[in-house]
Image (cartoon, rainbow, N blue to C red; front, side, top):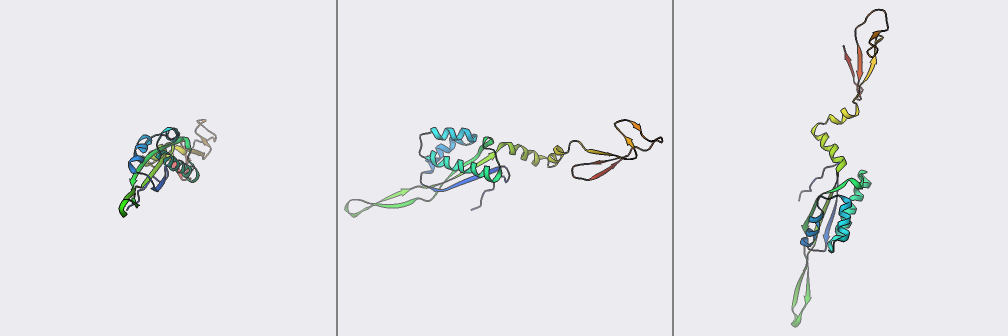
Length: 181
């Protein structure tokens, strides 16, 4: 089975495997919280009357702790971008019945995947994906200008008696020198 990739710098995930409950019972809770913010999700899960809420609450808080500890995310800006419930293997038991017969019992399990996304970082990431030079432009809006040959462009006058050519060197944040005439 291929492991699904998440966006590396904007998402964190938590995976709960072999949780002892039916996948359908967990799905009715997951459908209520998908796409909501972290704080709103915690409030919803605390007041829902289903048994699945406790397990899902633990997974969401674990994913948030992963984001805060490993990626320095802010809990207030987290949203649930993906929430999946998949069926796991059934635990099969035999219950003794009358006349020496056995009655099969199947206890279903499920796997729950929660992915949280930091919406503040996601906006920066999408801008970077569209135009990678945008982040470098944002850092260096104003180029630094060095004055050569005594000519100052701001004062618009020559400091020497003779007029010289208008030459200056512009340096950008990447420390590359550009000669302009």
